[in-house]
Image 1 (cartoon, one colour):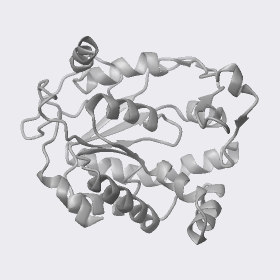
Image 2 (image 1 turned 180 degrees about the horizontal axis):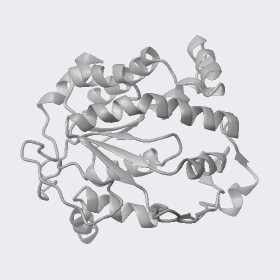
Image 3 (image 1 turned 45 degrees about the vertical axis):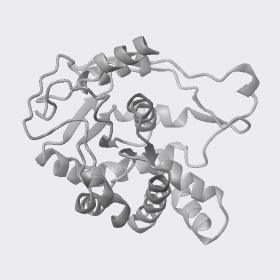
Image 4 (image 1 turned 180 degrees about the vertical axis):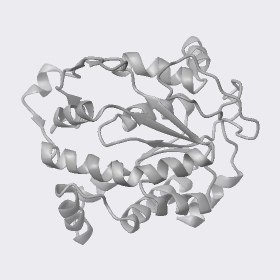
Length: 281
């Protein structure tokens, strides 16, 4: 892994953190906002972003990381996908992972690092440059490994209330024919104590997929809550680690994709860039 990631040190990054000045109108960037983003830059000349997405299981890391990956032209590497691919394979690792996942436990650092190393080696062979990591690092040890071998420009920490996370996880469905993911949960959390409410419409499948929906074996209320509890216990030192380095952006999702995507782009100073990309299309 070190051999692969070390190559990334020489690549350019989207934002320079040397002279940090950041202000945001969006109230969904947690206060006080860390001063890590400079003025908007021409990202067409600097595409090799090296970002990390953090957040509880079910918060939507994959959705927003994937969208940014397409927008910026860098690979989106989700450790959850790497684990699922390994689960679908045959052999001792698949059986070991199945037991871990079904019990709601976190996969060990050794397994995750090994899977990520193989993915990065494959990307390097294809000429990939830069990355958006989704689901890694999850522990301080993983963060230290990553910090030893490459420079991370930005860490985006997506946040949602726990009751919303539980409902989202329990509503997840996958079509066993086309493989696409959907969510049948209709979330309408009322605001209270000065906090805004959150509304999310379900992401329903087309008619041809409706009868083919399946639920992940680990998406039970007991397992989901256990996963959230474990994540919260391990994530606090990780968040503080990146906060102390001035690289953490905490972003409270205001709702579903229609509400959250433009606010996230604004916080990342990418709203103008998406408009330029759309105009050029």
